[in-house]
Image (cartoon, rainbow, N blue to C red):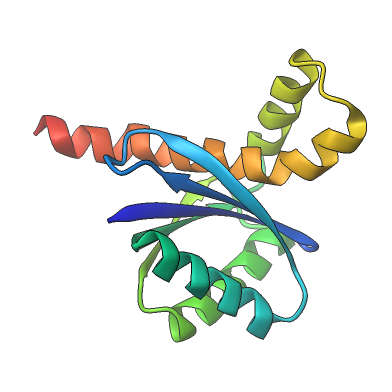
Length: 142
C-alpha cells in the first residue's frame, strides 16, 4: 500500500504520493480547500484511487519546536480526518519545507505564477520524502 502526504494550508492542500515500493515521494496535486466535508471527500477519493494505507500530515511547529496556532489548527483537522477516514494518520515536522520548496523552484527558474501553483505539492513531496527516509527505509534495513 502507498503512503499519501498532505501539506495542509488555509486555502490549499498539497498532496504527494509514494511510489509502489514506498521509496520515492512524488508530487500529486493541490486540493483547493472549500468545506471540510468536500476536502475530506477528495482525500477519501485519493485513498481509494491509489490504495493508500497511511497518511502523513506536515505539522507546522514553531522554530523552537513548540505548537503555535497553526499546529493547533492542524491537530483539529487531523481529528476530523481520523473520525471520517479509516487510514492511519501520522505527523511529520514540516518546518522549512515550504521555504525549501520555494528555493528549489527559484533555482529551477520557475515563474512566480507557476511557483504559486506548485509550492504546496512540492512541500507535501518534501514532507513525504522526509518520512520515507526516516521510517520506511529504516524498517527495511532491520
